[in-house]
Image (cartoon, rainbow, N blue to C red; front, top):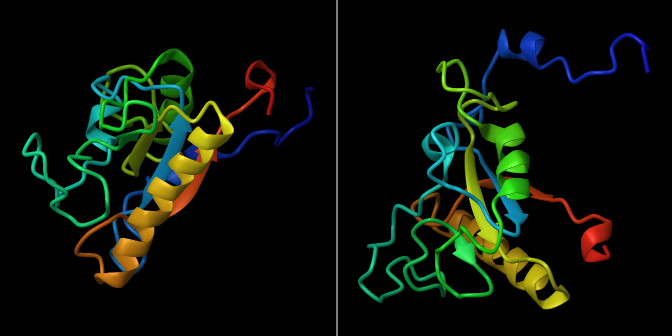
Amino acid sequence: LNAPENDMDAPEAWNYTTGGLSPAGDTVVVAVIDAGFNAYHPDMEPNHWKNPAEIPGDGLDNDGNGYVDDCRGWNVVSQNDDVAGTATQHGNGVAGMIGAAGNNSKGMTGVNWHVKMMLVAGGNTIAGILSACEYIRTNRKLYNETGGQRGAFVVAVNTSWGLDYGF
């Protein structure tokens, strides 16, 4: 298509905001469910949501959300925070479009330069999808119940299931 205005006008929006905080000052989190992610990619790592109420590797559920050591998100298959999952190419592409850090001369730029991304790996089956959604819901509910002291201010969830997974 050569029709004008068939884009999202991100550069125009960046004149006003590059994401990050809600008008009330909450850190905006977008959850991304996919097969896996490279959370240490230089453009992804700065915007990777990390659970501040968890202590890595202590074997405890420090924040009381029902998930032990979920410091970097959640892998519904391995039941830990190894968000690398089974494959990272698609997950990185999707998460990168949503929230790769921008204006840093490192490579790619997402629509929201400062949004935090909650990475949830392994939602390739109906059970996995439900588990992934429950993890996200639990963290948003915890955020609401604790006045933002625990959990995450998740405002959107991205799922990209296509023909390969039959959804």
